Length: 111
Length: 114
Image 1: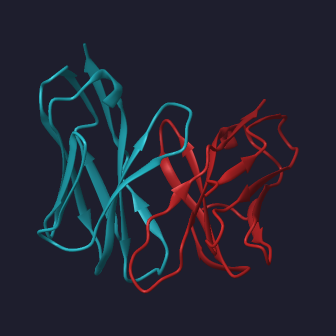
Image 2 (image 1 turned 60 degrees about the vertical axis):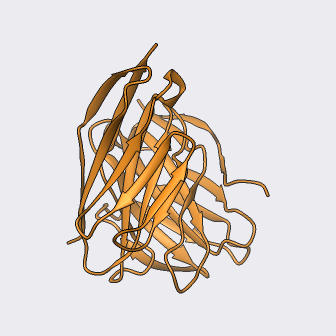
Image 3 (image 1 turned 120 degrees about the vertical axis):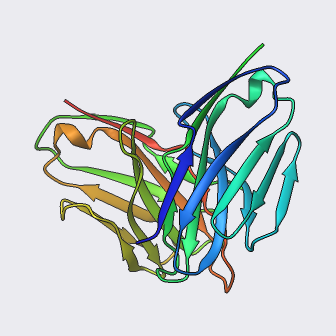
């Protein structure tokens, strides 16, 4: 079965301290890998879609990369407002519109 | 473009009751998925509807059901509520296409079962 594992579970950074979040996946034919940001009590907010190994996407301080087995979300010089839970999801070619979500990385950026 | 809307936002029910949650997708989106989110289990897939047909189903008991209307709006129903059904229920909509398309989530319905 398709699976997504995210690490670390929680990450505490000082403002300006860059780091990366990891998303490892097992899927029978990747249709897409998605990154979301979720604030407490709210629905996940879409960030990026990656379709194939080698692809990269950027948005402000965030950059997502994709290999054949994992994706990284790089956070450059984070600010306190970047504090949130970051979720990774994959869509395989088997179940057409079924998404498999990881358990997320809870990021806390201290001023 | 208006986002995904869910009603009600908050619900308090007692064990044994049933509940119906509603979701209106983004205009033009024909696929609607439902998820249950709890602190311990994360996002768990319930089911997905497209053109009024259930295409995918997660591993939840038959007490959880859903439907989709011709205007793509969707409802989910939980019968005989249990304490463990307390969760944030999220609805997500997406376009139907040949390539993968991202899902857009609503704000969720917070269900508390007492």
